[in-house]
Amino acid sequence: MAAAHETKSRIYQLFWIFMIGCVIGDLIETVYCFIGTGSIMNRSSVLYGPFSIVWGAGAVLMSVFAMFINAFHFNTKSIWGSILIIIAGAVIGGVHEYYSSYLSEILFGAVHWDYSDMEYNFDGRTNLLFCMYWGIIALIWVRWLYPKVCALIERVPWKIGKTVTLIATIFMVLNLYLSGCSLARYSERFHDVPARSGYERFLDEYYPDSLITSLYPDIKVVR
Image (cartoon, rainbow, N blue to C red; front, side, top):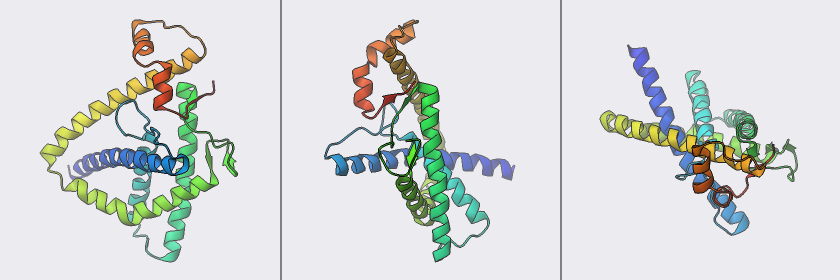
């Protein structure tokens, strides 16, 4: 029973780490793009809400990494410990970003970023500079943010947390499903594939190309 409760608690914790990571990541990318371009661009991965799925999933991966090193009582505060976290974080983040781009291409026929014009890129899906950013983020997350975020989640009463989690889960599942369908339909329209059902006609009417390109300014159909 204790093991089952611990697993349930861990899933609950990771869900909210995912949600928090989505929001923080969206904010970071918005600020980063504003500094680079001087304009505010939508950086969300979904149609509704400020949620960057790549960042949310990255936060979960970094949290699992933190759990792993904590289980082995790894000294994260030493110089060599910090260096190893940065290197491991760079590898984890780089692989995650690479395969997130690849998965987007397979599922929707489109990608949301292309680093082909940057030095030391890997198939345009990630690059050495951004891998190092992931490494620095991993160090900040493992040493400072992860313990604080976990403590914050634990402070929420279980009855409230359970209800809010159920609502948030339903919202995100529907949001992801509708966003995925809209992106897939966008790629089909790019290839002049006509709507084959009432649902696809609904997507064409309410989520046209103009809306998709405004929500995903860097989207690029690749297949």
